[in-house]
Image 1 (cartoon, rainbow, N blue to C red):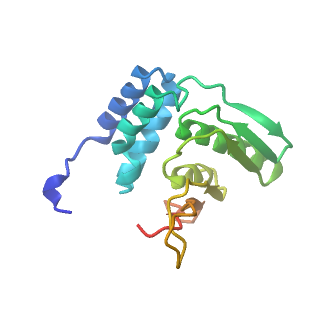
Image 2: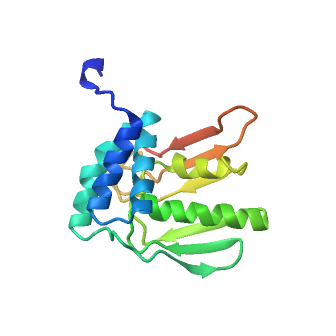
Image 3: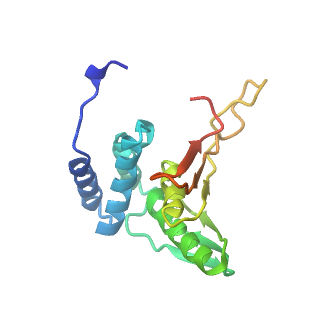
Length: 186
């Protein structure tokens, strides 16, 4: 794409603006900040498809009642190193963040943890959540499903989702090894 179509914006100001929009849509300040941070992080990492351009569609989902602005996110099942979070149709970034927080806590206690999320929404980039774990010297793996959006090899009808996943592994460098992909061709 030609450079002329891009507009450079200060990331701190963009984050504040995006958070303000979600506070206006009645998200609590902490939740609005999580959503804004994940969206701006995606833009900073060059994944613009999951960055600030998503604000409009997320606002529309809130307006249609598909996303709950003030959800009751809770641990639905708890088995120590294995748990399930009920996201109560919260913004996916918020429920994803809470799920990874719990996974990190439980991995610290048990050496490994798996936290599933149900009643979640679109979480954005999986790398963000995997990198939360790598920042704590843990390997982070985030997987999610997707709606039917792909034709399988040799097919003519959409039958499967692209089911994104992300992995972040700490390294001896100033940054982790990160893989964030879907099983589709972009």
